[in-house]
Image (cartoon, rainbow, N blue to C red; front, side):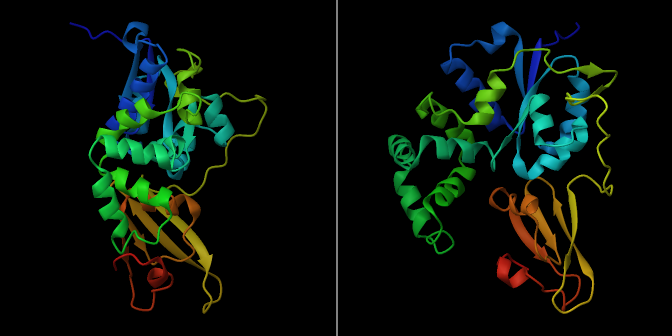
Length: 274
């Protein structure tokens, strides 16, 4: 029997993100099932091209973490974040958990943790050497990371509907079939069809970041890399780590690899295991 195709599809990174979107839609009085709208977790940004191909006729848009923006720009053929938004994709400042934590606020977070028996565990987490000097928002985000499946719904339930994070709000404001389709590929909506095509950078395997920076003891730039598999981030000979890679620090297990003993560079300052 042939599967029924949804009327609209929203793409998100994981199951917790899907649960958050569905919960907010319900709180706003919407029945996504009745509307024929499905929220699809991709299992990581690396699967984006496949899901774009599968749902090209029904795509509404989606959410992404800002540290993964370059992958969405490439897959959707967009030039910048504004173009991504016109295509229906909205950036979370770090990730959706961070957006929800900040929207609920410190006092609201304490109340939710207390109501669900985790406030004592959070107090213990705050006292750990790795976390005690971090700002409260950073501590809350770190504590939520391994509990996001549980708290995705609870935080949206606790959310003041006047303080809905912008990416969630904008995504749920979209209607099916707002994204133009051309053949088998999605294209960003351009303000001027005569605009120049996006510049094509150096092609690298999915999840591999490359950058160069000036070394204080060498002439000319030196190279550094990061490899991201969605769970672990490996920094290779790190120096002047760019913001899009740093944005992944809070959501990945980070380790450092030095290809030579004299390539320490910023490794010690970053403080990750070598």
